[in-house]
Image 1: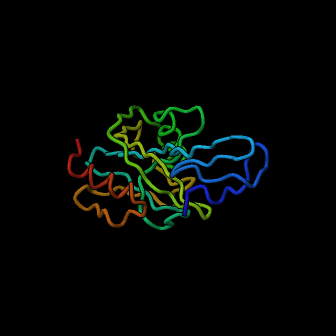
Image 2 (image 1 turned 60 degrees about the vertical axis):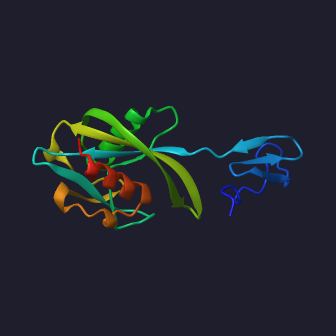
Image 3 (image 1 turned 90 degrees about the vertical axis):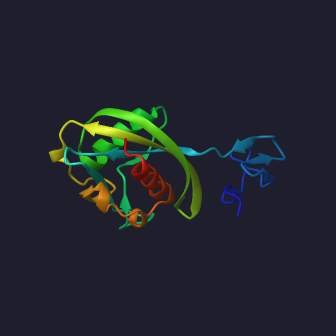
Length: 173
């Protein structure tokens, strides 16, 4: 299935001749409008406390409700990745980031509302103002501090997060 199959009509002229152009775009045969499907930007945080434990959350919503995740989420229009990770951490944990250092990025497919959304996930190593203030909010059903040696990658529900955690564990910097 093409990632734009759910989009049947041209958003400019309403024509049903809005056809697949290639693997990442559709073009209207009537007005010439072409839409490119580029990945959405998302962020994830590695937050390590003074005991060497990592902050993980249990997902409170689908996709992958009930599985483990890292704090983070989608960036908003007009936000930098750094602003997005700071906002998401505040929303999900109540914590205020004091520094966010970019580590790496990974592509992902995020299944939501019956379609696969391509994302580019940016991973950060973050420090926060007070580790003790962490509280599950927003998308997080529960927060847990887990020793890096006890972290089980297979319990993370999202593919890119599993890959990111695995990569981080090989070099926790």
